[in-house]
Image 1 (cartoon, rainbow, N blue to C red):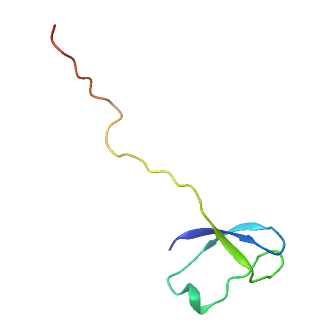
Image 2 (image 1 turned 135 degrees about the vertical axis):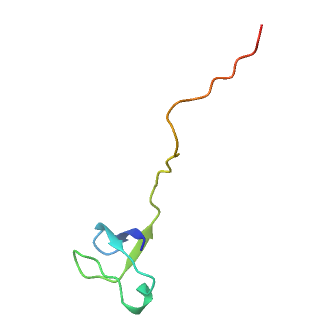
Image 3 (image 1 turned 60 degrees about the horizontal axis):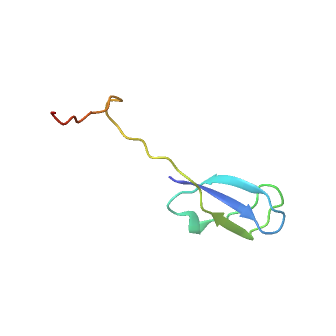
Amino acid sequence: MPIYTYRCKDCGEEFDLLVGVVADSEKLKCKKCGSENLQRLFSGFGVGKGGSKSSSICTTPT
């Protein structure tokens, strides 16, 4: 299940929610004021590269 960041349009509170596949069946509410007037925010994420940390060096014969 993904974690989304929301901002309440009424009080400005930002918070994260673990949202399931059936999230539409229940109303999301602000944890601070209880408002349903929420905006889902874009959040950054990192992507790691697996494998070894050594790098290959390509040399040209002279």
